[in-house]
Length: 452
Image (tube, rainbow, N blue to C red; front, side):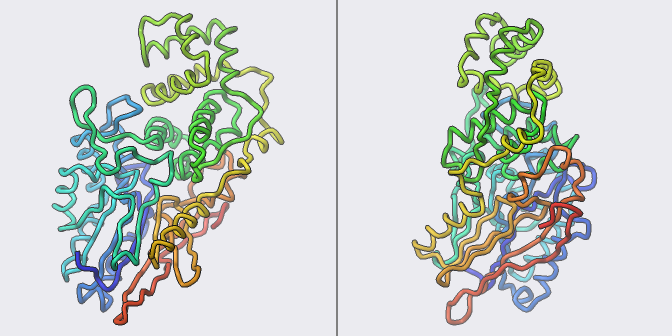
């Protein structure tokens, strides 16, 4: 590919099903993305076909749109090609103007490149790529690489999810796997599992819940609740982070309340809870397993964690949450100072902004002059020794990570409380080969609370 003199990068648009999709978080009340495309095309470089637009991951919200299209109850396999295509049709129908604008933007020989992120791993399917090209013109796709570059490696770009163990794929070079039934399916990463099987349901009650990024950060909100079902989810997420100490994009929770111990004790002393728990286990694994067999299987924290993870993947929350909530001891109080204790970020962890900054610094040492990541939904910029790092943030409403400690589940009911900042990165190579780069706001709106 011949590098264009001007490269514009946006990230994390999360385009869903439009007005008919209550879970669509993409900000489009004034067709902002279409307006950006029109603005770029009207400028001199755009009129001359000298611009490449790169959409750097999580452009299309396959994870949340048309949830009924994905019927497999699995913690390991995501959509088939046909299921991904069904989801794509809902997105195209919801935002036809975006795809038409992308096609028009390319008419003077401008380029459009779409990179896959953890929310749109579905872009790996050949049928999905072909369908997008049928409505958006001859766009290119960046798949199979953690990072990609322009200008002979001087500009390095990556979505960023592969540095986040909760959203990392084991087979990002080709995440299309043979499922035991014989059908090819996409790999399911842990973040997608929790989003599709729990967060999508939680969003119906608390619309901003799915905007807490990364998904492991949601545990800090759930720890403040007093229902065992929600605490069990927080424990599963926290245990995942404890098993991946390099998960700097998440946080470990320092808690004196042992949720696994509460579940074990309740199973042993509460006949009604034990009976319903065994029924859940039978549905997930073995229909013939007795209470004694189940008790042995979940007797360790490891065994319980594996079961809860698989249960979340297979059984709807409305069926398993009431079972766990009936087992919450009356003596367990999670209010006031206890809630603050549960929300403490483990002292050894780094926040996600700083982690991606450090990752960018390693690429500076390898010769990159400009590094761009996305994924975190947190706008960021850094300049050191003439090298620059940028994160444009998302085209959704978002919450700054440093304010997460003050947020409760009840705060997530009203999305209007949260701001949005629709940014893009513009890089231009001059005649003497120097790179000018900066982050620019296209549209911004403050929320009533939790402002940026």
